Image 1 (tube, each protein chain N blue to C red):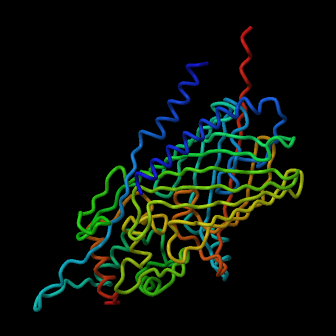
Image 2: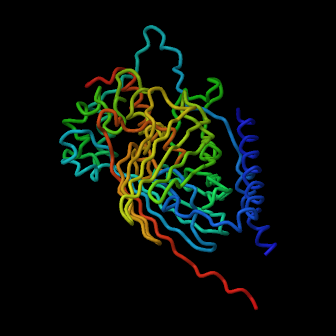
Image 3: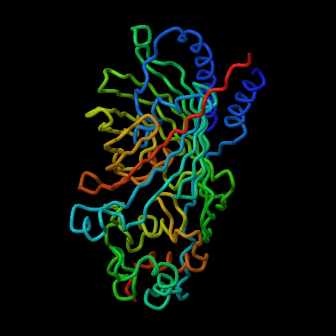
Amino acid sequence: MKLRNALHWLVLAALVFTVGCAKDEGPIFIPGPPPAEGVLIDTAYFNTEVLPIFTQHCWNCHPETAELDLGITEAYNNLVNVPSVNHAPAIRVVPGDPGASVMWHKVSGSPTYGLNMPPNGTTLSAAELQLIYDWINQGALNN
Amino acid sequence: MKRTFIVMQRAALCFLFTAFGASTFAQEARELVTNTFSWTQVINAQTVEIVPRKRSFGFMIQHRFGSVPPNEQWVTSFLGLDLPANIRFGFQYALTDRVQLEIGRGKYGKTYDLAVKARILRQTADKGMPLSVTGYFNVAARTDKFPAVGENRFFGDGVTPFVYETKHRFSYNTELIVARRFSDVFSAQMAAAAVYRNLAPEGQSNLTLAVPISGRLKVTTKGSILFEYTPVLVGAQVDQLNPVALAYEVATLGHVFQIIVASSAQILEQDLYTTPVTPYDEGYVLLGFNIARTLFVKPKKPRS
């Protein structure tokens, strides 16, 4: 009996003391220096660059019949300046502000708005994320 | 803040276990009030209850559907059942009549959680002890893949380049729960909950303090109405509404079934108290259910 009690306390102590604490915040995006005059900005295009990412990674669960249609005809209208159904009044895509855009949090792994996308264990590549980030940051144009 | 939290956490647990040991003998002779709540959780919040018998098991399924606005989407998304959902399985074991261990697995973040819950004081039928008090502590670990970190991402100091580390997966919840069964039909409880996340998103606090308030009103022999409201005192995001939930419960000795109307699809306290809830002030709500089963194990026969 004494041995069992000791085992109980050991389990409890292990729970409390073996897992360390940390006090970290992030990731925080701090833009680099603006391009020098005369240097061309690498423009992100919605129709030819961002939309194919949605088609490849999102469309299976967000087809035309879904509440959030990310098909080629409606994706833009359903994302930009549209309140999130689950997190309203937060906006799905706020032109020029990825940090305020629910979609950016969803795809970039931020825990702010719950389940991350895609939810099947895969994540977007760094290049794809950068493209989406640049597109939002450059004003989320329907270009 | 980090050191203070660790000291607070350990002091709370030392107090919890000391009080637990001292109270064990003092209450043995008195008639105890049972069934303050039917299950170990009200809806999302922990209750003072544990799996009721030593060496017995508990199993639970908690499911939350998607949030729907007050318009035709109630029909088009079939009450939110078509929307992304959250689910958690929990498995409990009563080490003693007063201590329970629990392991769970939730969908959001592929999170595993390990918890210990200990009864410190129990309400008695006479006026000796008017309240039940229970302590609770859990550790949760997200196990989903870390996302890619783009360029120009930094820690909160704005200087150190950001990289995900294993410690960022962990979060903790410590609670002291106080409850009273006022009559055969009404029970109420209040808790102090301290949630600590090793990694907080930009602009958010690692430490969150909340006070879950909940109650049960029995309306039939087996049926009850449950409510839950949790003011988040420290660490709430700007304009974050406090989580709220209502449920109708059907409970028997070994089974509990709850149908839920809630403000969040989050289940684990670490997520529930730290992420925005659906704007229920504008009519958005979501449905869900909880199912719990207690698997009683016969006590061992004393050796002759």
